[in-house]
Amino acid sequence: MGAAVRRRGPISNAVVLGPGEGELIQVATSSVLLKSTGENTSGQLFFSETGLGAGFPGPRLHIHRELHDLLYVLEGTLTLRVGEQTLAAGTGTFACFPPGTAHTFSNEEGAEPVRFLNFNTPAGWENCMRDLGAAFAGDRAPTAEEIGKITARYDYEAVTS
Image 1 (cartoon, rainbow, N blue to C red):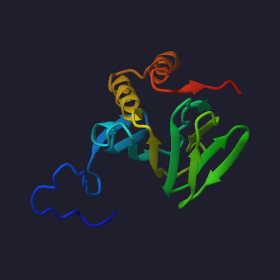
Image 2: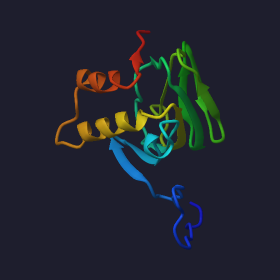
Image 3: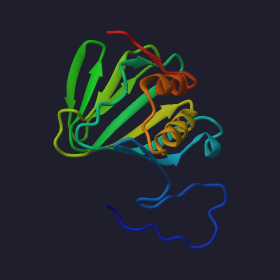
Image 4: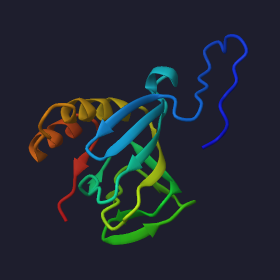
């Protein structure tokens, strides 16, 4: 990782987070480190560093009606599905899924973890991640139906393939 951030005095309303800093959310074998949310971007942007464990199946193929979903792979190979096409997205790959574009991602094929940056505009996806993290925090994993009810509240519509 990078060098630590050195701070000298207050930063006003700016957000400066060093490596590993932010709000950490665990969802199954994935981790979502919130770096920026609607709370500090006037509702404009969600930004996270996401890690997927080997074998992570990812969400169902889905669309967003208003959300732009952007991914940038930092480490490993993320499997992307765009409509009917499947791509191996290695380190340095950028993907932008505008509203209405059927897409998903996974690390099912990978033997190693994958790390990527996730940007969404407008903001709000952080609340979906928080709700999913709370659902996975108990002794039992939520059912697919429970996960569907959570994600349906946040501009996520599963696509039947």
